[in-house]
Image (cartoon, rainbow, N blue to C red; front, side, top):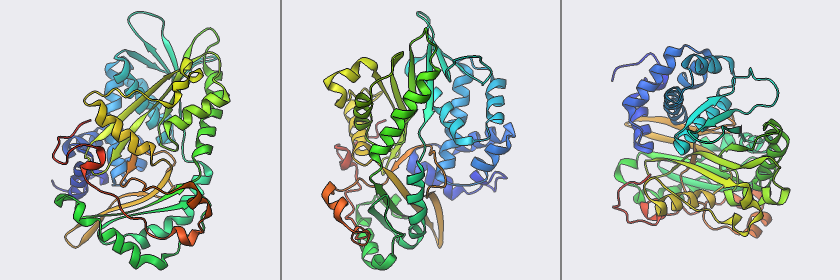
Length: 406
């Protein structure tokens, strides 16, 4: 592949790693990028196409995919382009269109999008099925909080200093941790090197560091509840029953979010909530899409802590993937790089600059760390390296030679 004038797809080595990690065909990523470039929307060009990395490659692919699925479902192309041009904040609009595409997969119905021209109460989406009334859905993306961004700001300087030459590091800290000192760098890198033999051969050029911020889960659930009550409920027409849809960012376990909403009290007029989004559970090269639908009646029942998993391919496998994320919720500052010859390619840097991310990324599961330890340890003690858990397919509860499941 020659040099492409679009920076996102100009580096073939980067695209190869994106394909290796996500399973997305790099030819289709290039097609998506050129399609987005043809729209000639300045905000998209600057935010997505000008910065080559894993997040933007996935985002461009999903945006093109959502655009086509919505157009096929009856949303005029001219109105979609007008929305993208009008909304200068790229990521909230991106999340809204991705959510609409996921809702279409769930319902196989027709959908309309509010473009800001309606009068009175109106929701972001209206889904119409062949029989029955149209269903209004109000969508919200819960981005990183100010507290979470401040955590990332304090520790982002440590990402480059802690990045090993190969292997992976996972550190844990409270959200109010002081800037992390690299004093234990040699010990930490030794722990990262110990994970290398567990990687498949084609992944051994990777290196990464993740610093997980703990203590914000309750605040995340509270913020979602407040937006449900103060923003979502007010948009549902008085004579209609509608749904609230939230972009899933893994800020807290889904069951904890549901329990918090149960305690707050579910607003009248809402039929239920939908949590939807994507995730990548390394090293499995699949972008998984989850849509969790919880009816309002469930919030008064004892089974709010139990989620029934229904997958397009394998219920047990999907449940294991979701469980990995449920057990590893929180803000995760991350730097992921690859080595090509003598050159190092930065694949992904998540340091709080971007509040909404295109997918949840879990490089390594959290090892068991008791709440009392997290609460009592000083920041210096939390800098101690955490042993890397198994990076094989066995973490999903399936044999290592099993085929990929979505």
